Length: 80
Image (cartoon, rainbow, N blue to C red; front, side, top):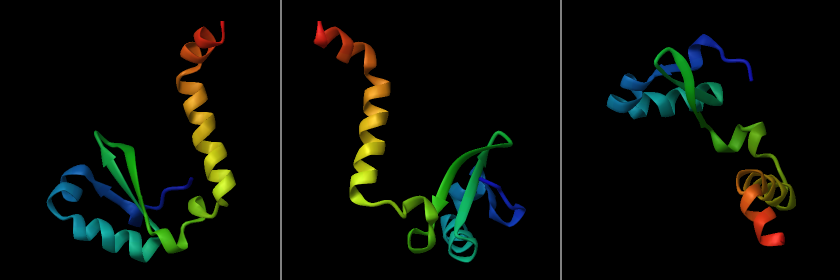
């Protein structure tokens, strides 16, 4: 993801003025919140976000893969 300067909001600004974050997301499609001078969070405008253009089956696959990766050792132990 390429971050444009107009999408950047500091953590302090987001904490004190979240409506600014929403305005940035509305106008650019996403707001990137920086913490300690590094991108930490993304606030997306849902209706125009390509990140959310997945079918329900694709979303389930993504979530299942994340769960399996995170808890692989537990699943392997249960499989014994």
